[in-house]
Length: 364
Image (cartoon, rainbow, N blue to C red):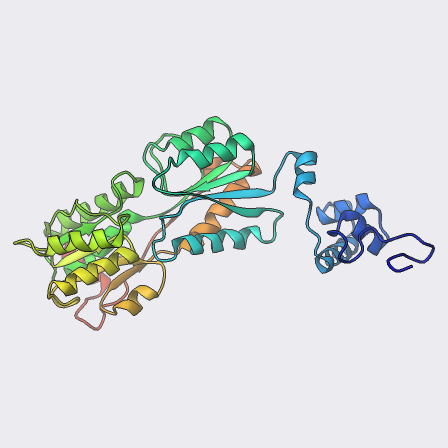
């Protein structure tokens, strides 16, 4: 009869009838279910040849652990929840973060689940839901605030997590961040080296921790360089692009407009360029802009833009490693990484000077 072995015994999971199970692999290898289970877990008491054979068959038949069964046996979900603001686009930010996280999770039993929220909702809601329902084993969050209630809540509940960005809560926790102090200082150096004397900063929202970092670096560079800070507190990179463009047009229409702008995101830089050109000014001649970029699309848009690379895929990888290590019980203090930018790219053929000369200009 079709679908039966010789002797009349049906295979544990006939093709198309059910998802492959441990019994399926045991049937195909001639091993016991316990041996198969331990081989898939890379148990040290199982021979390497047996492990390779079992793992090969598991890949060939498309075996995936039953997550409900895993949770019943171990109390774990094998899920990492990435909690993201769906408004947080920033030139591919979401796709790059997801790509980095999944790259690290791919060889592990863990799966990524995106838990979205919008700027119109409370960012605590998705975190509270995941923690209370135990629908994941770890959480990754972004857009951290100095006194971030999410960090305090997860710490008090002993829930493993990692943050994209630092806090000032006094709580040690895993994080990965971009050094926005160094970014802003590098940007100011390059603008001064290109002869710019009136500088403005388009920073992140004042509610976010990295706003403090970026404004501190900018202020240090401006003071040390002896140039003028043109206040631009009516706009920030998290606003809609049309609002940034409108506020930038007003900035450029002032009696004393900036001739150099430091911008905290690539998408906001596009709005700045639009305002510059609509004001009858020429980018690179009348006004220089130094901006972060996470994709080459920024300089493809306007070659005159000066850019500092920020790697969101790297951020995703570091955050995934940190939350997995925290789940395994590693100390939070050992799971904190900082990406430090080293250069401003662009403008070399348009009158810019070497970085050493820029630093000399700052100190003169």
